[in-house]
Length: 597
Image (cartoon, rainbow, N blue to C red; front, top):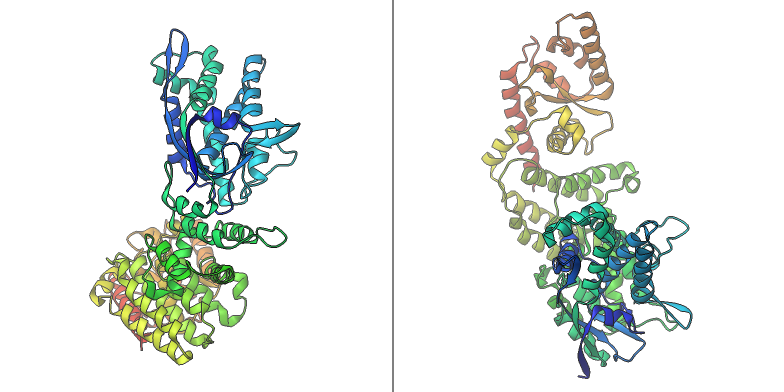
C-alpha cells in the first residue's frame, strides 16, 4: 500500500493550496451537541492567561486520512470529515463574530484572515473553498463558508443541513461576548473585561489552528474502502449503514455522462427520512429484517450480513438492491406517516385507524412484519388485512397502552416467523395461515388476569386528552368496543367520549364511567349544563344522570341504549362504574379472542 504520514497543524492543513473534498461514499455531517461541545471544550480549556496575555498550549487533534498525494491540488477526505467540517463551522462562527464588532479594525483584520486564509482562498483570482462537499451544497457554502450571506433566505432542508445549522448556532452562542468572557474567566482564573474580548477570540483561533495532527496520504484507491471501515480516529463511530453506504458507492460508478445517480438517490432517502419518525439506521434494519428475516440481523451485525449477500455482486445487482430499498422506504412511509389522503375510500378507513393506532402506541417492532406483508406481491382480501391490523392494534394497545408488564423482545421470534412465511408464501392462503399463526403466538404472550387488572386501571380526563396522547389508549379501546357493538371497523367522526357521571364530581374518570356518544348529543348536554349553571339549579355546573338520560335516549348507538336499559331507575353511581368497568374488561377480552382463529 502506498501512503505517507507526516506531522502537521490545522493551520498547515488549511493554508496549503490543497483543497479537501468529501467523497460521495462518506456519511453526512452527523455530529451532535455532545460531539461539538467536546470539540469546543478541548480548544478553550487549553488556553491560559499570563501577564495580561493569552497563552496557547499544545494539543493533539488526531489523525486525518486522505486519498491522494500531499502535493496534489485536490485530495479526498477519508477519515476526518466530521472534524474538518466542525473546524470550518467554528472558524466561520469566529469570523462572523469578529466582523460583528463595530469600530474595531483589529477585529476586522482577524476576521479577514480567517476568511481569506482558512475558509475560502483565492487561487489565480478564483475562490477555492478549502472544504468542498456536495451533500450539503449549496447550503453549507451559502450560510456558513461564505462571509456574504445569501440575498434570499436559505432554510435547512435535510437532516444534515439541520445539524450544520445547530452546530453553527451553538458556536456563535458560545463565543458571544457575555457567555465567552464568563467562560474564559473561569478557565483562566482571572476576571476578564470587555477589552479582552477580541484578543480572547484570537487566542481561541490560534489554539485551534496550532493544534497538531498527523496527515496520512494514501494513493491506492482500491484500499480506500478497507481503510474507511477500520479507521475512525476521533468523534462519532461509523454506523452499520455508513459502512454499507461506503460499500455500495465503491461498486456503483458515476453514469456515462458523469452524473452521480447513487448520491442523488441517497439524498432522496435522507430528505424523505427527515419527515418520518425514524432514522436511516432504524429503517434500514427494519427493511433488512423484512426482506431477509432468516439472517437474524441486528444493529451490530447488519454490515456483515450485507457483505455476505452483496460483497461479490456487480454494479447492476447493487443498483437493484438500492431500488428495492427505495420501494421499501415508500411502503415504510405509508405505514408510519399515516396520511389520511391515502385512505379516502370507505374500505380504507379502518386501515387508517389501525395503522394510526399502532404508531400512537409506539409499536416499532411490528413495522418489520407489516413491511414484509405490504411488500408481498400476493394480493390478499381487504377484510383479512383489516382483521389482521385490528388484532395487532388491540395487542399493542394491551402491551403499550396499559400498565401491563411486557418485554418487547418477546415478539421478535413471532414477527420473524411471520415474515419468513409471507416471503415463502405461494398464494394468499399461505399468508392467511401466517396471519392466524402470528395472532395465536401473540395471544399466547398475554395473561388474561394481568390484562384484566391493567384494563380496569384505565381512565380518561378531558383536560389531559387536550394536552397530549396520554389518554389515547382509553379513547381507543372505548371506541373499539362501541364499534364492535355497532358492527363496524372504524370510528366515525361524530364519536365523542362522554363521562356518564360528570367528571367535575370527582373520582369518575374510570373507563367504566365512559360511553361513546354522538357529537350533536354531547353538544346538547354541554348546553344543558350551561343552562343549569346560569339558573343555578344545582348550585354547580353539573348535570344529573336522570337529566342526561333524557338526551341519551336520542342516541342511535347500542352502547348508549344498553346503558339506558341497564339503569332505568337512574341509579348509576360509583358502584355502577366499578361493575361496568368489569363488564367492559370482559367484553374487550372476548372481542380480542374472537379475532384469533
